[in-house]
Picture 1 (cartoon, rainbow, N blue to C red):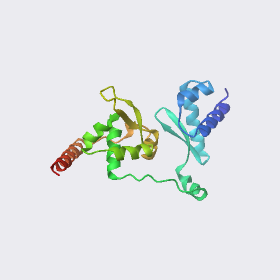
Picture 2 (cartoon, helix red, strand yellow):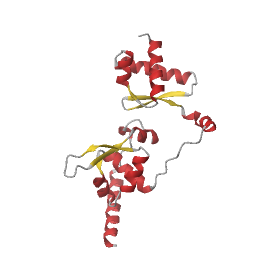
Picture 3 (cartoon, rainbow, N blue to C red):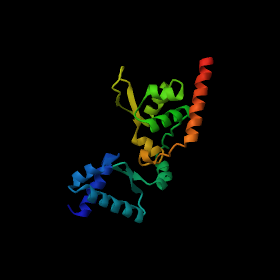
Picture 4 (cartoon, rainbow, N blue to C red):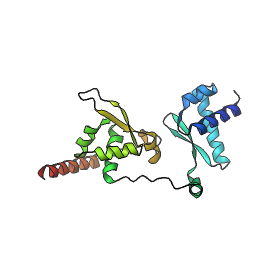
Amino acid sequence: MKKTRAEAVIEAVLFTMGETVEISRLAEVIEEDVKTTKNILKQMEERYAREDRGITLTYYDNAVQLCTKEEMYEYLIKITKAPRKLSLTDTVLETLSIIAYKQPVTRMEVERVRGVNCDHAINKLLEYDLITELGRLDAPGRPLLFGTTEQFLRCFGVRSLEELPEMNPVQLEEFKQQAEAEAQLQLEV
């Protein structure tokens, strides 16, 4: 397939899908290897930037998505309602952090770390599509396992979980002590 035709096919697929597509699947569609497909994507991305276009390619792990450039957001607002902002309370953010760093993780493991019931926070995170059910743990009761989604990566501006900041061991120990103190206070009440 000619390079210009391959670019057109990739662009059509990404535009139509509206979500990420694995690069290996794009390679199958254009009948090229993954390395060649990555090179074509890189050239497309450079062209979009050079020509001052309103779109760009965004990568998430081994997948790519056709997206609107951030600087076009103000123009989109003029034509449509502003997108719903996620409202994450401290409780929901704490729960999300635990899931992001410990995934796959069960509700019970999250509650053990936080020291309180996490039903509401987990339900909010599922509603916002920041976490998803990954399956069930092979243990008594077969509890659900949770992990983060591509939407999580988008919202927090990271391309993969490896880009999450590392936890400072001293700060981690402080968090643990605070959680234990909170759990102790609840037992006393």
